[in-house]
Length: 187
View 1 (cartoon, rainbow, N blue to C red):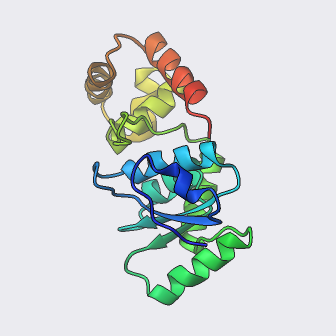
View 2 (view 1 turned 180 degrees about the vertical axis):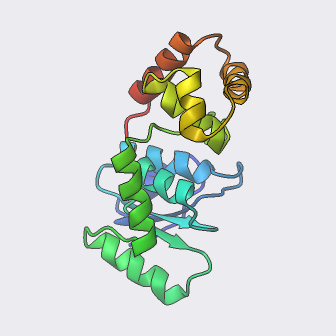
């Protein structure tokens, strides 16, 4: 059974098997990820397919991290979306080889959750995310700089911007922030 829902009308999906959710909703870019999290958390029986404008690495990983069991690009033919929905409805995971590689790479790296605001928008740049990940592993600025082939000064500047964006003032608070966001956001 397929149905469409507006934000907050979750009672309409009680009997649905699969929900197709666009990554971009009226509320803004990437708000579909938040909706998928809410759907999966609120109704353990529903399976979600994330419809992506483009299937870049970060979006694919975030779709699966949010609870989607399948991803499909808007540019793919309608028949592919049908196959995706059918497969997910049968309990399978739907991703092409490249998308699966993205997810496996994230697992191997132990990639931390992306830092997002309440609308699901990413707060940090990819470079800032990489630096935060290395800080979480306990590396010092010099080690981070060597690892990412940056100057130590550049690492300090990125960390300063991260601290400003997150409203924190040091590495210890950053670690606590990351631990707190993982605890609050069950995935």
